[in-house]
Length: 226
Image (cartoon, rainbow, N blue to C red; front, side, top):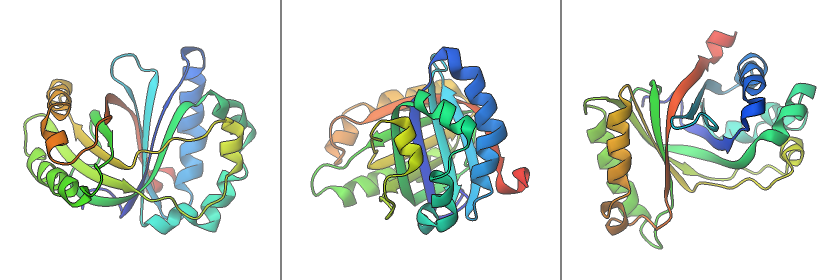
């Protein structure tokens, strides 16, 4: 398994251009060290949307899903720093999925990433998993691509946190998440176009799946921060 653990926290949001530079400073120099100091958090990676840089995709890789409800992590969620409190209201249109890693092959990071947020049609979970499992196994050797990962959301037993209250908005959730990493943006763009074709719908994916292309901004492991 190429992701560094059996769970992942995948998040998407928009950031206004006038706070983007300060956000990146905070996220790299305060937030990453804070999160990666929590036991069980192994690697964090931030990408920005390839078209305009305003969209953000962040993925934390965790040892296990129960780390998402651990006392040390929940304590951080309920005690945001002053800088966090200042910037979190600027996290717009938050989608936050707390996931089990179902399939993972190849590299966990790359210069570019494609993400797909999806849900299986009713009764089609097994079909969707089989379809994306075959994609994961085949994509890692395709020119321009280096890794593919399938995640499934399961909400941990955590009450509404102070950070969520600071953002003053209800987080949306992606039921299933498909992430492909690569070094060639055009290869990922071609894959994005094919994923929006008829095949996923025929093989059990519900209508309304959302995909996006991102470029790498920063990645660090817990050992890097330590």
